[in-house]
Image (cartoon, rainbow, N blue to C red; front, side, top):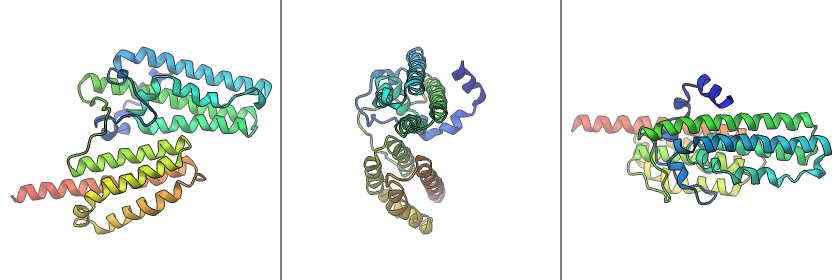
Length: 272
């Protein structure tokens, strides 16, 4: 019911998800082996719905226990184990990384509130955020299943494919930046920083020469973002929301870079 309501209220979700999130080739999960179910989303929607309901019930049970018996009665590691146990985990990770990051943010919101002995009402508030992220994720996967059925969503690859054009490279950079937020939300700042450095060396440096010809100041801004601003934000003390703001600013610049390179290529073709 909640998931259906989400879809009705967010008919423009395809725009929010974006072509780079839904229509490009999905990459292998960074959290272990993924199942074939991710290439048959429609056939597993019933399973995913059951898993989301199961997750909501599990987290509700943990919070109930905390409210009734206190933090000594709660094993907070379970909060992570529940999420990693379900197939829905990889279904959303391979199709819509931003919401995947929100789920991790919600899980740790509950975990840290319990471990800090916060009032039950505050823990409930964190649980509400997590539940909202679960239902949003289910809505995103349902939409992705429609794209997949129409052949508009590429199958998940078990090995990383290399982009072949500069616009594809920039799309891949944006996807990798989404993963930075996800890794940081998982409390893995070193993994997030590694993605940043790898993306700069193996993706951005491959397009910056052509981009300098179009906008040298934009390249300088992005170089600072990759090497200073974002790594500094990934210090383990910055909030996930603040890291997300840095990434969103960078993605806006990457989108601008893509526009410039596409326009330059069109101009070149028109001339020749």
